[in-house]
Length: 185
Image (cartoon, rainbow, N blue to C red; front, top):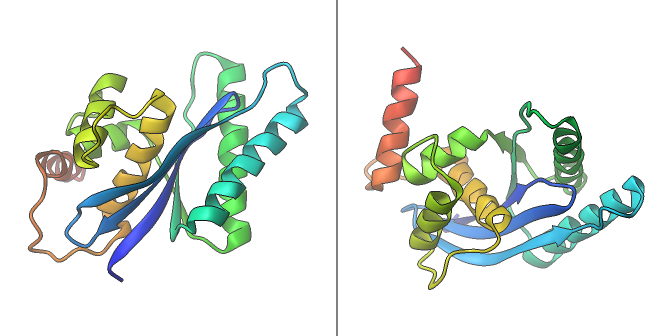
């Protein structure tokens, strides 16, 4: 396989980031698609979920990813936010399952460490590194879109793509590998 096409989904009920990247065996990456699927907070929940599903389904149909990477839902202070995030996450995982696509989830800390080398990086740092990795002229906007691209890159680098063992690692990949090594102690 010359490259792996990964759809990253940053789940959200109002704004659901979607990003598709092609990642080569040497870990270089190319932007295929980036966007945000939106739903109106004033509409009933079933219509909002249907809008999110339709948007993700359209991206899958148009770009034919090999795998789907979704941000793992974690506990937050705001219960309604975590519920919407969990619902959108479930939609993305369901659509992957319906298409027979493998799916994986990654925590925000894991993604930040993979992309920036620092698990507590802020949104701007993630956007900056995603732009640098994908050789973009501008930062991907909004942050949900950048997060979706970061998820896709994290998944490919974290083992979704079997790279030669002698392939050079980026500084962020080296930092992430070291952080992983330390957590296994």
